[in-house]
Image (tube, rainbow, N blue to C red; front, side):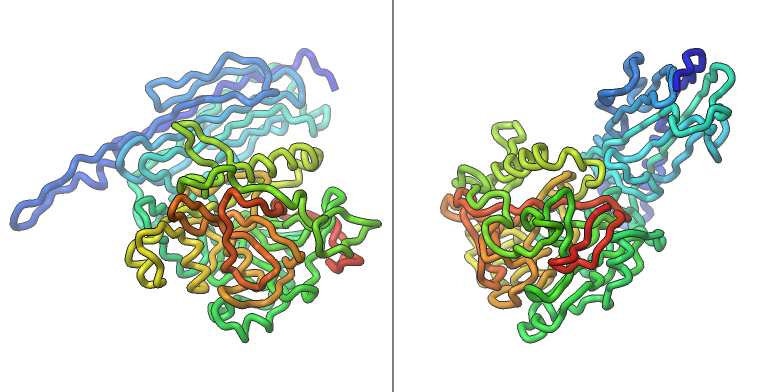
Length: 509
């Protein structure tokens, strides 16, 4: 379709107002006996760092005025034309903030419906919807994504008969955060403990109730669940042997997207899946309703009958990092003299994905992968009878105590990725435990990396891995070479056929 004369001119104004409101919640009179010292606090919410997406129509670069307003003007000439950019919402102050109100207007009126020919969205970069009470912690940044599009899925009579000049505004008001604050990233705790020690996680709920409509693989797992798990499963060896099937992670049943996961001994669960001509094992759902899966080798004649051996990995010999003499090398991305540097494991996974999965990129969600580097306190190490001069990380404690989680306790450890790794916690959910456990469905008679740090001592950085044993307590120095099994997350409600057996696996439609 080519309609040269029909243009849509869109002028978008992003406004962040109410900067003084945050102070209204903390600058109250102190009526007490004695002396009270009120520390200086800084409120600083502003826009920064606009980046226009490649493929957008040509337009003047958006501008930021007074740090709180983004302006741009663009002309969309043909159906299919779009303009998209990201902008950072920055909390440069010392006060945690959260979203108070959100308002979108078209030509001065709050948007109820858009014209048939127009798509217009403002979300987080990963597509997550902006909602009230979502937190913007002090000294952190969240990236917003704005997209305006001349729809190409409309009928001829829906195209405007004349040029349309539209004024669009989006206003988000922040206020000082309180106990109602939630995380803008499903799967990450709303408050981040950056000062050492493991965050207290009683259940895996990340909030966001609402009973979302589900279909496809997401609905299949919901219908298959046998109820919430029991904390004793992860510490009681005898109980570890009895589960087989889909379970609901404790505390998430009332979430918008509960966490459903597979648990059971090798050969006892039907979670085999073919996607892009590769075999995978379904591990669990994500906090967005996606389906997390782990690589299990090439498919053969529409089946996944090869369950063990070297072909279930993309390589049998890769180091996590080439050096291991500093604690930073347990990180998936580490600081190298001020420059973020990918670990060798990330490089291996990214290269494999770009070569083998780019053709199905639209079916894979950007998901959270947690490389939890939160350090244990001296008291926590003593309670576990560990050398207090060594550095231990929270996955070690959770594995020892039998308290796995699907949440990430530190935002800086929560990587938003298309391809990532399995965590020690996810391995525990599958069936293994510290010192014992079952030979679970992830067993492949080989060794491969997990993404969970263990400890650092005497110039030895170590990360957990999986071996033939049924024990979670398997650690390697990061410069030791083992296998690699990619992990991706399918988009929510992915359609499928099949039953999940090795001879009739689920097949992504």
